[in-house]
Image (cartoon, rainbow, N blue to C red; front, side, top):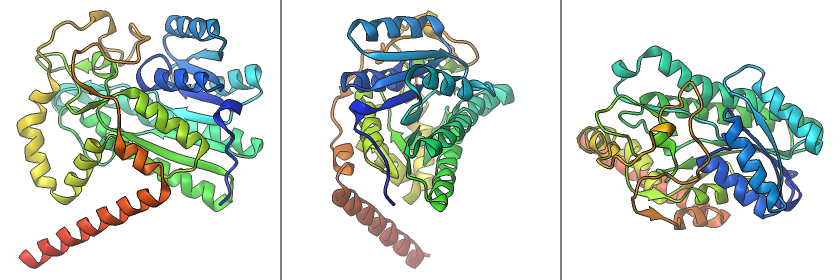
Length: 339
């Protein structure tokens, strides 16, 4: 299928969750390359500060203060884009919340809230984007999933479940669009552990402050993947080879992966560093202090992902898929013979 994707410098890009982490990194990179951006988030004060900084550097930006879990949120964002820039070319669903703890500690109300933002917010955004891009004649819808779309992580089960659901939704959306023959690409980005304020913003039921388990990557790498997908149709892109390894390990050796997480990932998601800003903690239901791309925890951060760069070349990406499929088939055959 032929897709109608413009160069970044000619695009208007909508980004939900645009006041921190991956969303803010993507907005910054997009503006630097000449795009106009529409940033959506709950924290209106943070949006205003970010917009002022972008404009001071000559960038083009509009903002929309909404909770993506609200039913009319996506319509409001599209209205801002239409009013300020006569529409948009790419819609990036990035807004997300999370909580840490056991399922008993988290409870049903928090579980529902995670799904309201991380799944139903993406559903609303994608359908509004689809309607707009159908009329516009093409564009891109990019959903920020996770390696946890493939493999659940202990202590973050609601987040993992929502990202699993997001993967299925993205596949279904792509099939609907393909069947209609629309020139709209649909991409699922699967970041590994990123050095963003994500753990600082999460609600926490554990004894110590939460953190993302190592190896941790630079969120600018996800921004690079998003902008690449805005110009080049891709089904999915992993950001960080360690995350892909975890995903593959979970498929090949699910029980071993269970035990590994039980033994190492509970402690591995708790930090002994108590320098976190309490004003940023727990944005599950209400916005908190915001406005940073990277997290505050002093940990080693990988600034490059060779695995991502490899995926950006179709032949190399195909070789990876074939190689992974061969490994899976070989292991599966060995396991069947061993029975």
